[in-house]
Structure formats: C-alpha cells, structure tokens
Length: 305
Image (cartoon, rainbow, N blue to C red; front, side):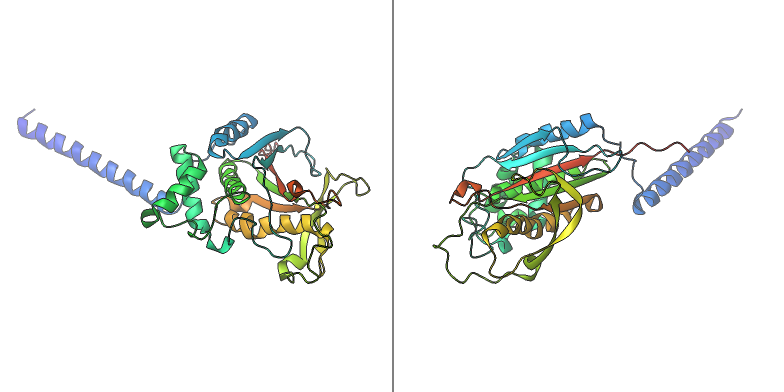
C-alpha cells in the first residue's frame, strides 16, 4: 500500500472519530439542556442516619435525638425515620406575648432567606458550621450579600431556627419518598394580671390555620397525633392556651415554609403544626419554646407487575 493511500485511510479514520465525538457531545449537551440527569440512588435507612450524623457538626446548637416510635398516624407500609430537634440554648423564647417578633432576635423581615440558603450550601460544601458561614457572610457582606441586617442580633431562638433550616435542607436532598416537619409549640402560664388588657390583634394567618390533633385528647400530655389536619380557630384576645399553637404557626409561616419553597425537592416536603396546650399555670420562661420533629420516609419498594 502506498504512503498516499495510508495517509488517506488515516485521515478518513480521524474524520470519522471527529464526527463521532461531535455527535456524542451534541447529544450530551441536548440532554443536559432539557434537564436529563443521572438517576439519583434511592436512600436507605443507613444513608439517612449517615446524613443526619454528617449534619450534626454543622448545626452545633441543635440537639437531634432519634425517636423509636412515629408520633403521627401512619399509612400502611410507611416507616418514617423520626428525629426530635431541640435547641441546646437556655433562653428559648419564641416571641413576646404581645407581638410576633422574635424575642432578643430582631425583625425577621431583615433576614434574606436566599442568602441564608447560599450560606447553608457553602456550609455543606466546606463542612464549616452553619453559624460560622452565616456570621462570615455578615462580615463580608460586600461579596456574598448580607443575610441579616446589622440591626438584628443573632441569638436564641433565631440561631435554633436558622440551623433547623440547614438540617431540613440536608435531609431533603436525599432520594426519599417524602420529608415531614412537625412543629410543636409550648407555653407556661405567662398570661397573668401582668398582661396588658389589650394585646395586638392577630394577623389573618394566625386566626385560622390547619393543625394535627392529638390521638388521645383526654390525656394531660399530648404525644401522638392523627394524620388528618383540622382547622384551628383563635379569637381576639387570644388566651394563654393559644400560645403554643401561635408559636408553632409563627415558625411554620415565617421561616420553615418560605425556606422550603427555595429547595430543589420542595414538592416532597410537608410542614405541620402539632396542636398543644400550655404546660403550666405558673410562669416558667423555659417552656416558652418549640420542638420540631423531622420525619424521613424511605421510598416504597415497587410492587411486582
């Protein structure tokens, strides 16, 4: 075979490879453009436990405890992995009796949830604690944009809520069936003769909202709940027994639900308020708080055809 023929054959082979590579690149680019992604591996219970353990150093002010029994009625086949999330901080006031601003924590309107989401993403990438990423963003606001206005003091219970949002962000990234967040408010007997006769009128979304009712309503301590939501009505002036649900509704509507709407997997996440009542007629500030249950449901196995 002549040298010219060899060169011609070689050039033809190179041309074919170029065409093949160009076609492959075009196909991959088209798939990426239309949102075709590599199939995410279905999470197992071990994956969920590992994700929670990995998240714990990022949320140092949270106490995260595994619960052996689901607190909400389950459909047949559902086996949620349940965690109770509480604050480690001592002063856990959620809001003052006479208004709806976080006690000692400034105005929630100053918090940019989009910037908070970016800070949480950086925390997971760098494995830095979320509080460090948030305070870092305030310090270098020119580059990242401020998460919180300088007028807001970040402390309890705001730290608790912001780190809770970080935990929710992490678990919703898992390929699971769904994630349910159930918020339970608490109150002491703080409504007393010291209360002013006139308190602020309730905003509309605090007058009527859905809650999960207790399974055994006659019990003094409500632990387990029905799955079906029912309407909770609160009237002006609200009573001390209304405060637990008002606090839970505050966390749901002002923080958790708006943040969930910023998540990629928001459709698999649901937020509930657990109906509760004041635990004491005496003034015990340590009970002016909220607890949150995070329930992760694994994908159900496919039924045989």
